[in-house]
Length: 402
Image (spheres, rainbow, N blue to C red):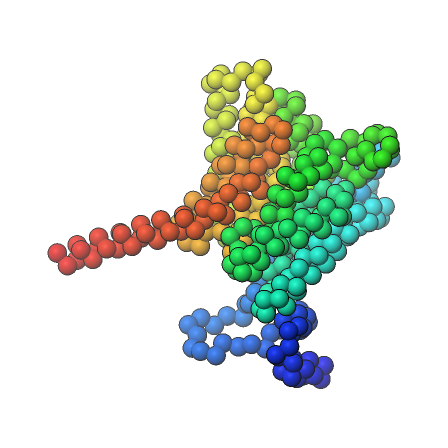
């Protein structure tokens, strides 16, 4: 209590200093904000931005820990040092060696993500004289989960700087951005360094050729396998559900993503409307493609046949559509705000994601592109939903006054 009181007094004495926003950020991180609503309030609640962000982080932590185990497991599996027969519950997965490899590769990604991102936030807070919000707490956790485990740290640092500056700060900071910062970072990485974000050999530690090192390990993604093998899965359905497959650090375990979704819905942090509608949109597009195949409109010789022929429901357990629906599409700042708009917004994300996945064999995953696209259109969707509501109510007024 004494330390908190001293920090508060220090803050008051130096409130006119240029660097005080950075100090306020550290103070808020350690303690609850001392600020209270000075005017009259309509709704009183115990939640604030810090609690909301911490809730999302708690939902992401299981995916992070699992990703560390899986990174080591895929490394040793690719080298032939362990067998995959034990599966998710087997002793070969939950070993200390797997975790050590994963920790060694994933923890630096987390440190760079938070260190560089928060440094940029602090610099802008000092330059512009505004408070440092807690919005990057979630972005900093999301970024390591949506990149390959072997991505060079300097690339990640450059991408984080770009994503925070262009994706958020140029719009005014947390709450003002129109694009999801984490997805902006991933988009920058994909278009600036495509060979490190796509292909068959970027998803397993040690799989990419480095300075004359023999390219002896290949870690192919599921979507790449489907695109090349006419829709034939190279992995067991349950392996894909539990997540013991190559892929981005936190996107592989659909089981843990579902648990995280239920937690976010129960705490009312994540919108169930957006999650459900995104999955409905993905299933609808999958059904359309299955119908095209069944009708014989696309032959096996077509380059699109492979992913078109995948049973529609399997699109939910391959790739990152489920992760995007739960943790990305539900971003309260960049998503639609109206209830009807959330249904439209989510449906179009799922629909467009599967469309990009099928029609772009060179990069058979379109979730982040679909979400970024709908981030841009979310305000337009809300505008027309509100406009339609106003128009409908005006008709009621005319009927009553007639």
